Length: 273
Image (tube, rainbow, N blue to C red; front, side, top):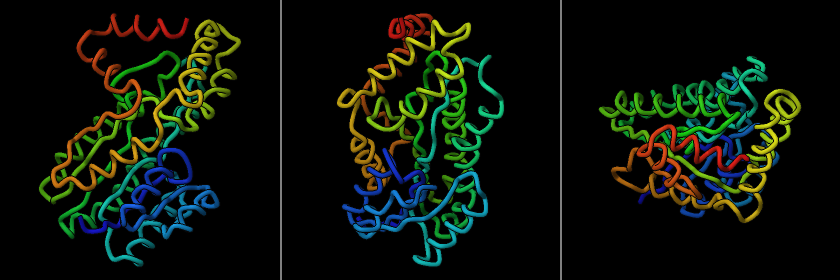
């Protein structure tokens, strides 16, 4: 396979960092984009490039894409990885926080995709790889706004795939399960602040406990399993439209799809008692 020019958002930690380092090791030209550019020193030390970019800042997004084009002349792959999770009861969650969740997880992703697509159309090739979640096909208590963004991303990606197919562009969805990242650290305390002491405390406390257990060191899958899957999708001449990977991703989505809502409700709630 010829080396590809790859842009990865959210590359300063977790899955994004693992993908950047893995793809660099495969010989690709990798640009990692993130707000915390100082945390991508290991990426630049290995020959990668670090872009200071907040997906919510259109000016920074345009400048980052233009820098890659100025440096390399083209972009072969865009990996939309930047995102985070807010948890808390719907009643307890401020709508400004909910809107920000959508701005980062969906609209920021859409912005950089829109900036890259004209160049991929012109070269009549490219891959858009969107990091969704098993949470895009299922649900958990207190995660309404996070799951809403991932469900939206699934549908958005499917529509985009049909729109750009004739231009030689593939759209791929990656659906990770429980991965050893900062996910639990980011969502845990804010969730308790929103819902830990109010009418939904009977849910918030066990959800916090179950999340801590699931994401305890060694309990989830390493971020490398996602990185290798993305590498596989990039190398594939005709990649799958979806890849489910990591702990619980396939079994949980299977239960949700084939056994129905009530069975899935019981399965999820049995974990938060």
